[in-house]
Amino acid sequence: MFRKRSYGAVMAGILLVLVLMLMIFGSRLFTDVEEMTQVEKDNRIVVGVSQLGSESGFRTANTESVQNAFTKENGYFLVYNNARQRQENQLKAIRSFISQRVDYIIFSPVVETGWDTVLQEAKEAEIPVILMDRSVDVEDESLYVTCVGSNFEEEGEKAGHWLEQELRKRGDAQESVNIVVLAGTEGSSSQLGRTVGFDSVAREHANWNILEQKCAEFTSTKGKEVMRGFLNKYPSIDVVVSQNDDMTFGAIEAIRESGRTVGVDGDIMIISFDAVEGALEMVAEGTINVDIECNPNQGEYLLRVIDMLEAGESVEKQYYVEEDVFTMENVTQEVLDERSY
Image (cartoon, rainbow, N blue to C red; front, side, top):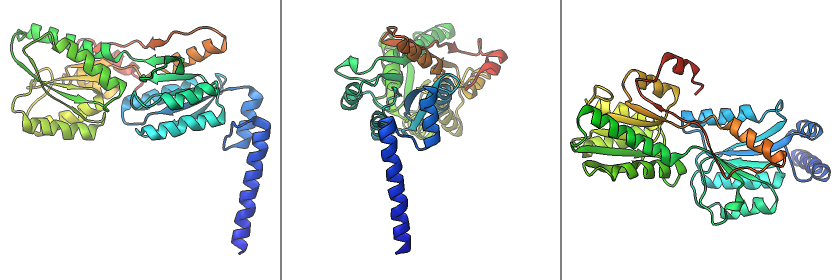
């Protein structure tokens, strides 16, 4: 009995604090009352960020970029959420941000569809929404202010054009080429864009045979599993197109375990995406033939966009980050030393 009364008293106290906080600060609630008070006192801009997950080196670097941008020193308070690759978690996080009355909502959508309702709720609450890294497919594009990220379709085209040039250089431009594709999360902007971009180039070459494309979820473990299946199913594979470096790492393990070789002097050419430091080291040594960069350092772009909005300036609907294509020829020690992810 004593424990129950004690627990009830504690809960009553917590509820009283929450009510007082509501009265003073509206519905912007944080777990640390002192911190919340200081945020209000400093007149900091509150940004709610829902990251889609932590499935890759790219995603980790992307998160760090955001956290380094929205700091107290820059006049911001960051409310961060990791959705762990589940759309329902992101929907809950965004609704939580709305209830807290954050000043801005930033999120990297797991998939493109299914956002109309929650974004309408944010619009009705007059909270601007900014998309990070990936885009959404909504009927009303006014539901979000802008999108900061990569041109995924262009990345896919870059991969296709590199393969064109490489086959021409080898004198194999007219030979039959068997290709398998390790695809990322189905329905994600990066998976859709890179697929469309590469396919647009592949269609121009009747001798390019895309044997199969299969989802490997942007993870090393799944990449190895899917690649192992491809190797068992297809006796002749000339090119692997892997839509991110983590899947590439797993695919290379599977290929080597099968007794085949990869890279510049190998049996199978490897085309990868992201260009994280570990992958660029493999490009430098000739294990990966080419890596199409996907720049995760988007925090400074997002910071600039919000600063513009705070100043009452108009912003564009889409901002693309700068990206490169890496081969043995341009991956120098200086490039590796400067890599932050």
